[in-house]
Length: 183
Image 1 (cartoon, rainbow, N blue to C red):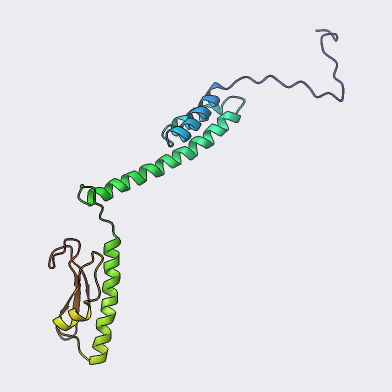
Image 2: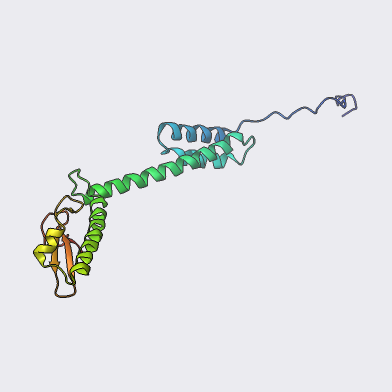
């Protein structure tokens, strides 16, 4: 090689940039990740993420990096959506499989109502110095309903204790789904 074969370099001119080769795995991973996020709610994002990870081994890495990021976000969204669907199906199954849902809301509402009913009975006990009889205690609670819209029942347990009872979801007192508060 002679001195005539090398082009002269001037101080004001930057050196020539190397020509970038393509990165088919990085581009494919980016496209699949983006399509997975936009078109399939993240279902294809794990595939795009893996392709992009393999694409990180080659230059240029720009599309591969973007594919990994989009693929990871889409995969996370797909996992959250899958958890949501599984929970919804579980709630549906607990509701009897007929499309009705049995949420914990009525039970929580009933427990709060029972707590307020206990306060009312305790106030009556403090004022009169004794617990009310079953009929009188139930009458005190007649304006209160459980989470299913049903009346509560008061049962005196002797001189010192009592139970306030909700019939629960089935509406029948004395069954296994009754919700109670006992003092």
